[in-house]
Image (cartoon, rainbow, N blue to C red; front, side, top):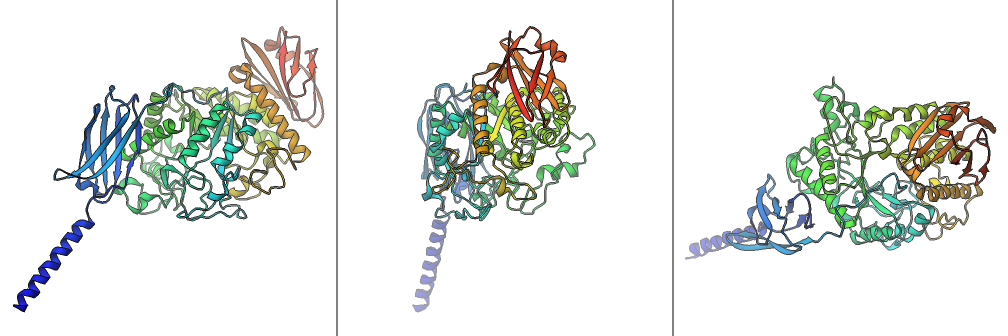
Length: 617
């Protein structure tokens, strides 16, 4: 009998172990992304990524008018399901349950919300050459909520003494200073990425995403980001979101439970990208070099996403649309545009522009050759047949040429680069800038010369394209010269932190030179806002002579003459050779000095200064 008792005990133990094991592997829902959607989209397809322990062991059931399950895909990781839905034209906004069942029994449920789109959402107007963009690195702009500087569960804590650490700037800080931004004359805000970057160090810049649907709690919340958009819009300012498709942060939640082996390029091995962007167009390129460009990683802490995987591609496309709708965006700036799979990027741009035909997207192609940059723009006829729907690009060739012209002996680098505009399908839709978060600060790059600063800013604000000003440029911020790291290019905006001795928002403590620069930018921005000629007019320029560069913006409403004098002494400029465009004009008004010019046959141009003359008949 004792023998049987022992056997029964063993059987009971095995049964309990089996039941416990079954309980341990019972499917459990963790997240559904996108977490909600909208009715009335032009593309009726929606693919949901579902994550949860052994969730692939379930069947999916949805019973809601206008929503049809087209397919449910299990992948190699049993913790994922991909649900393909078709949303009929007649589907109404409302909530429905996604039921996850086993043997006819519901074991998990997710209530999915279909929202009504805001009026005019599809026809929203993106940023354009009517705008001036203010680029802000939120961690370095203003600390509106000190309580979120360091957060439980976030790996990196605030340390303002570290140039490469987190300093505590946040979304609330931007909201608090919308008045300053509006008064200066900016009409768009581009924030460097605000999504969660839960990395152990060097996470303040935002380019190592660890959650595509969540604002970093040290920056604020999703709700605050949406609130920023609404409050900015009330002041006539749009919001441009900085997105990153090429890579993620090494602490992304995917890294703990990879959906598929090919979700990342080369995973788990690290192979460095060759950074040779010419491979996209090179007719002689080897497959080895091509693949290393598109599949290589930037650094080990930035795993490279495989956009050739259709599930990765759909995830990123839908994430973009989600943020446009959720936050009311007026544009997207896409980081490292040429590094993800080019065919997926074409598909993405075309999908976005199909949903929002008046929207704008600017891609970062950091190259100083117009031939390389122009390859990606919508309407470009490339020899290899590549087409995309990307409307805009960052004009790095002009940025580079402007600096060379101001620090060299001639305006010819700038003149010659602008003359290459024939390579672009739409040069008026390029974003022009003197510096950004990755470059040496403009004032440093030109030798801290106020005259050259005015010349450069006058050019950026009067040439063709969409101007972008980097936060702090208006107060002559410096940094990034002589090998200084990125942290020095991204210094805190003075006045953004309690106790700052200098406050650029109010002018307290600024030097006379800084105040002059700030007022100069403000004057030109607010003048430009109401000037259709400089916003949309055609451009005619003349070969620079004697270190003076002259060009005109014109349309049927009028003509503006821009004179950039890089000489250290004043010059008397004869206007005879500009007769083809100046004929019939007898006087003018200089926007910079406020002076009227009664005789246009010769113009006295002050040393190292710009003139922006509204010509009059």
